Image 1 (cartoon, rainbow, N blue to C red):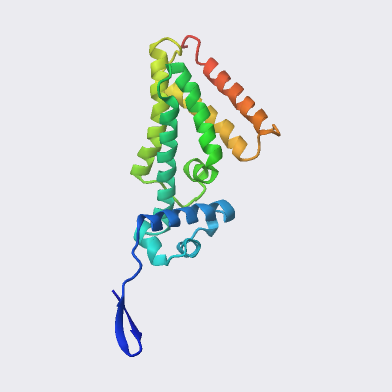
Image 2 (image 1 turned 120 degrees about the vertical axis):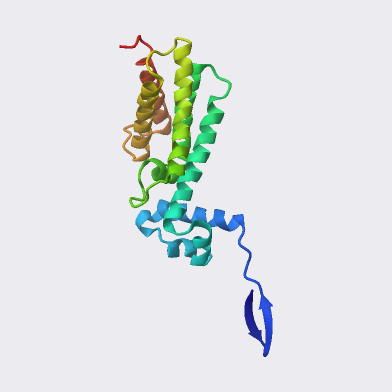
Length: 211
């Protein structure tokens, strides 16, 4: 309880309650700072100011800057994973592979700052914890499963992890170039066509017999 004096009489006023909304506000503020000013501007003090809370609030919820970045990383991969999971439901194996690639791109373009933290090492001094790495790996495992199912029905040939890693790297490459503004097409529709064509080439390269 905080004690304040008013007209010579002690009155007791509780500190504002910390709620999950406070945590979400702090997290949004951190993402906004990275997006608009870059990782070098991300400090506990700058986040607290942007979120309209004390630095104690940031420490209470996240333990400091590293915990804040970890939360962005985990939040990103959990939402990314949920998007991939929804995209792959109920589809034939090879169609699922294609849908996962398209969903990857859509999510990344809609969440570029999270994506930069997750895949681009946007905060250089941050190292993901074992929990965070496990969460990240789970999103890749969905593609491994889809590839394994495609191999089982004879649509794709090869070893599931190697094929999935090849596809994942190719998808990441296309998306990263687009996010960096290095895709040569000048319209959104043209960039999507190029991605779709690239995805087809990636998958087609896995359709023949294994070496």
